[in-house]
Image (cartoon, rainbow, N blue to C red; front, side, top):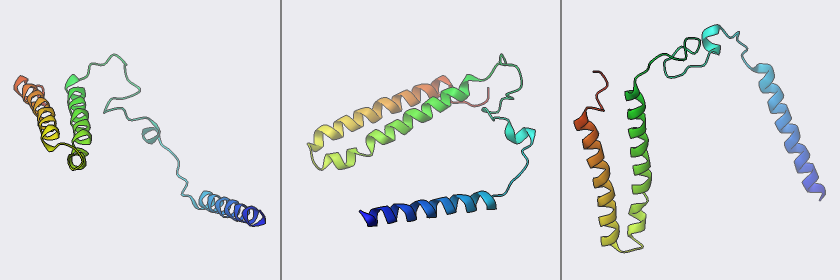
Length: 117
């Protein structure tokens, strides 16, 4: 019991000392207007809230998120295949990949991935 109290005291003393040292040695700068204002996707936060913006940016962001989710679903498939039926998981994985690639091709054919008009 005594050892636990001593260890907790030492841990608290060391962490308090480290926090005090970092506070004293931290570089203190004066924030200017540009650094203190939030940056919101290239829009001026002090301007009008009704400013039109391109929906293509958000469409490409959504497609990026979809393909990130695809990667997180397909990567564990390699370890699952060793424990289960190989044919079933191969067909499932290829079907999933095919649906996503067909969706990407459709977006590409419609011109939704073109950044400039």
